Amino acid sequence: MNQKEFTDFYYQNIDKVFRFFYLRTDDLEAAQDLTSLAFLKFWEKASLGVESIGKNKKNNIKNHLAFLYRINHNLLVDFYRQRKQKTFSLDELFEKNGYEMPEFAVPSLVEEKVATDLALEKVQQALKRINELYSHVLIWYYIDDLSISEISQILNKTEGAIRVLLHRALQSLKKAIEQI
Image 1 (cartoon, helix red, strand yellow):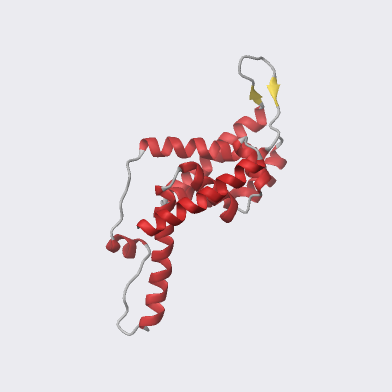
Image 2: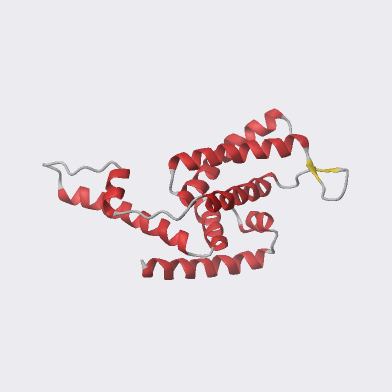
């Protein structure tokens, strides 16, 4: 992969990669750092080729997006190993999102915005509670708009297996949301 191809690939996928990390870490700075690190690792491997295990010849990366998401997954695993679980209070949520109750605010608009953000926070918490593979598949399919075929290449599974994973992931997410 040359520099021009990498630049095009970077601009096509930067938002997806950032969103992937942000939804999994719920930390803007960590998501930015992990995104940068993912593309750096991708560039190192894609520009030099990947050494085959036990062989001296280089392999070309067949699917760049699948390879990038494999890097993302590995970085996320490392991130969680280094970080303990973090909990949020309602006060922290208000502070984090910059909410202040103005004196003359229209209650319905403020309540609606808070309800939307709390629902998003509930989904993010539920994504953290379910199986990691399930949350990855849900984010890739519903948020990053990856196809079943692309996800199957990322995970090196059949398309049928991905459909089953997606179905089970949705069931698991529904149960996790109900428990919150």
